[in-house]
Length: 266
Length: 317
Image (cartoon, rainbow over all chains, first blue to last red; front, side, top):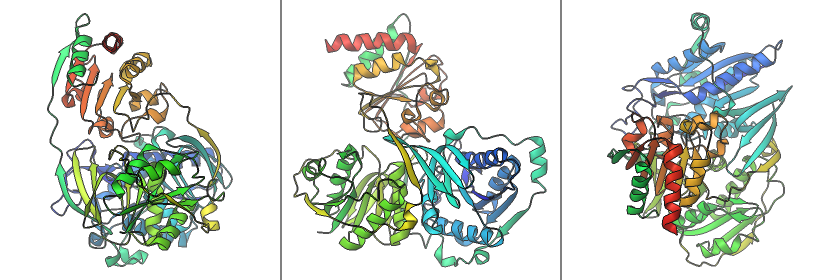
């Protein structure tokens, strides 16, 4: 089985994230890393290989992003992915979800030209834009079954059966390979790279492709080709800390209820 | 006036509140037309009452058993048929996926998780809250028919009384859209409390509950609030994932958010930071959430909440 896991390089959510003057996300001035939510996809790919002992399963980490984004691929390789593909091209900067899904789909086609791709995996969302639309867009572009937001993944042969926790119901969704599969953070903690994994990752193949390698024109991507435009960004004024009381013999509850009453919540 | 399509979110025919908010927002842009996928007999009146001039009913048994893709196809055919000026979709996981597929199908830009929509000469301008609520972003779709998904609580639904003329629409669902099959669906049990994302007040519990949510639930019920949980509480198995507030759970923006025994990691703050008033109860005075609060109690939630519940109930008489 040939698995491609899409991984995104994002600004660290715990750092001071900012926008550039052209309203794109600052991906250089803030430390970046493999999106936490994509780690779950890498983890599920690795678990699939462990569960399906004896099968020949290859895992490729695919990343679209600036040069520094190679760190996201490295992390996936350290966790246990076999190969990396990094699509990097100055023209890509500022791409919206529609353009990004095009680049990912074309890169998957090129990977598939060498060896048929059975499974495209992603996290449930990125931790920066948090749109959650890339898996659905990939399924649309690649004309593959969309099995998404999986919180539990089970498979037998070519049939995958997942649990999807929706807003109003929990569903069991079934699809057959080849497919696009996105997994949530409920699938289980992602492993930390071991020392052995970190050393092994250095020797794993990592290819760097430009847009011309995957048959995408520069004018199909980037900020100018984006189908959406950010008009303005504004930092929310920081919240100012209100009163903090320390509870002593019930005084906390009284003060709390007085506060809620003063705000007319009671 | 141009037509604005609003995809109706419903549970077995009962229209959910966010759809009514979307109809209100759609009226700022043009004439709202509801798109009802399923049996509209129960919901049509509600939709008309909240501004739907037309209701396109796609009652096709071929859609229901499959995930997302057939709904995107149905919407595509309606956009082409009506020449709609924009499509508004509730920002659920499914709504966003429908929006994503529709964007590719009709060659249009998509904006997700809007918290407000205004009109710039009929062109929708969407407001989003990003980076854990630290930034407000406004944006437009610049190509095709704007597709915007909108979060719950983005507008107060207005009753305006519209025609609500129903039109049965038949759509063609491709075989390619019928590849991810929903083989079982188990509705979430009703809790009797307000829906988490729609509630005016939310009371959430975290690690500090130690697994005992009774004080949190008691206080929530006294205030008529929804109950939420931090990821730590969900990961510990104390509450189902549907109750999780935060980056990978629900984003809430109520009038009042009460956090009990929640330290306030960035992932949690991302889900509640835009709440109007924030209150925290925590034993640890160093808990980062205290930095955001309008009012905080350093104390044991197991003592503070039951006493506060009693006091609230006493005041209500």
